[in-house]
Image (cartoon, rainbow, N blue to C red):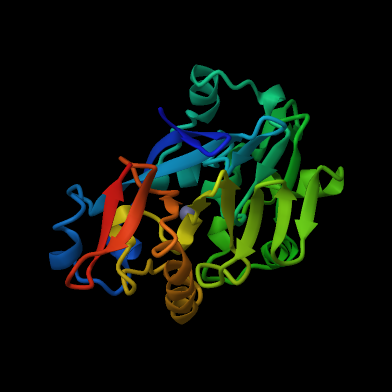
Length: 278
Ligand SMILES: [Zn+2]
């Protein structure tokens, strides 16, 4: 468990465990001779992929950003990706009970980002965090109703439709403050409506950048995942993000880094991106 203080806020990184993705898909057009210097693939070319959630305690609110894969994956997907399902145990170890969470923010609705939104109770899908309001972009939810053949496998309606139906999930239109100090900002690229979560307190800023920059190995502008629907928009969004985050020394929080949930991204003397750990 990683924990730090950001101004008056406390940030705790909790993981749903490690799953696996094909290394080629994870690094897009980057050749294996290059990415394999950063990440070790197994004999089937899988690489380990983290599932980092963050709990932000603001004093007034307990906010959970992202909910991992969860425990409802169908057997055929468990065979491909695995299903670690560790988030609730790790939250408990961090002293956080499901009832403590009053806000859940999903950056987008791919199954590896909102899996613990709901759990099965009998035949019913119910909120894992019963007292929480959940937030996602309306455009992302609309898209999730009719995803393309390319990414339909990533959307499981069980993770969000029951919450939209019972009014527990709020659908946002664009950038917005959720609670004082915590706001969302849309960065298109991975999906059209993926949102990052910006956390500000005491003059310090952290940003849960989600799949715009999934791990420390992806910080170079063109190291873009093959999953991204709009890779050229990913480039533009990364430029926009770095233009603010680097000079203002934001802490970048990485969804899928299996080792370090956060780091400062900097440019060295040669203009190369480097991730400096907290
Ligand atoms: Zn993802």
